[in-house]
Image 1 (cartoon, rainbow over the protein chains, first blue to last red):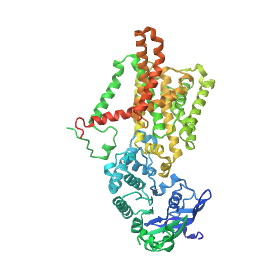
Image 2 (image 1 turned 180 degrees about the vertical axis):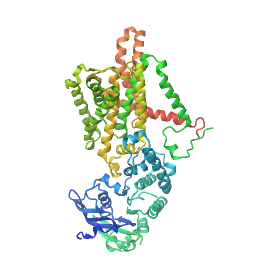
Image 3 (image 1 turned 60 degrees about the vertical axis):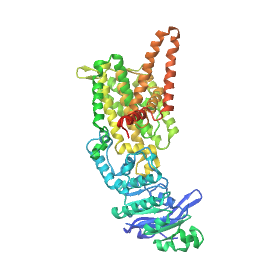
Image 4 (image 1 turned 90 degrees about the vertical axis):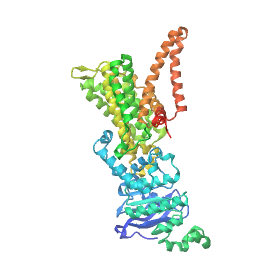
Length: 274
Length: 347
């Protein structure tokens, strides 16, 4: 067990998770997970189903409250914050099961992502006058020209989200997360259930976002091809315990990782793409 | 020939009324509404006033229930708070109507804030019951707080005055109603296209995701309650000044249900729907009244059956609407509009 050290204030780390324990009843979902993500990194979290990957993200954006441990973002302890206080800091996320607002159009969903950065008052909003009007128009312009264009969803922007196919919904969710102007983007299985072409599109978008916007990315994914290709470092969880962390090529050959995934070396090689 | 709309700026695309065609009809509608008192008789203007007041109340409820997804069974009580506050401020404090009515709205909004507090903890049917309790508590206060409300005897409310002008007829009062309806509807429509409206709809569609998008649920749910009951309060203040009296019997539980029926028949979450719904719920009973009395003359022996039949027909109409058009009158309107958008060459 690693003791928390005094390096938490180190500016090099954008996000630092220290000794997180999460329990649901008697089940230990996360046990003493400590990890840190550097600024400008693409950091992947992998592990078998039920390893606690999503729970770790849920802890980071404060949806779950860890029973022990602390989380630092840009050197600031964010453990006591409420979920709605996380996006203003610059942490955005997408969800494993798409969590879009189905009754709203694509463009409104994306606009909603900017919510925390808008300060339109109720009266000004109601009369759509002056600042409210300028803010809305600037927002629309920016979303159209930076996000909709980048993610290639021009053709669906006026559609209700509930009517779209799954692959596009995932893309809209990514767009909404981008509208939050994140410094850190948490992606929970962005390519699940997609065909090869869609997967390649999303991988390309993630790289574009990372390169052009300078966004740090934390990625949970089962598609080893994507993980090994685009991530800088990989963290492996198994039953709530971190069993390995390092660059993809090391992880690929790590015995514990191979064991956790299939328990048998030969088969695992193909799955890990080694 | 028209083959579509082409917009050259984001401003054009963000507008509510986009095409020249729509604006033309809008101007025509406005002119029609302004000139209505010149051609209509007292009865039609009376109904028009009732419609206007219902629209303001329904728009408010639709913001809360249709857009934010918080079902309220206490809307009539909020209307009552606004009505009583207006009446009391006019008669006891001597405040002119023009200040008393907004104060009624604010008082109602304040009560709405309190009633809205449980909404953070309870949802759906449970919130229904919480707001139902509010309805009965407020009704009880209307009856029993004799010192202020005069109990079941009620308060006589003098008509609004502006200089030497007294708005004591259906004809003159119509303009006050019209102005407030236009402002109220425009305000609601604008809220829906900004940050606030998006937050409301997000809470309705997926409240947990909304919170993770940075929406403070407590704040926005309360805001929805406050705005909604402000509308109710304005509707109440307007109504008591129109009928010149306020008693507890004006705000029964059935009025809350009537408001809910308006937004369901009209279309949940649609401002246009609230307008259609309000018109439907006011006009149809009035028409049934007319038909019932006409048929009584035709079939004198069956006369006593026609009046009760009115309620049955009304109820049946609402059920039929729900079955055949669950998205409400607004949806029918959209469908007709879409059909004619590029008519006759839609493809």
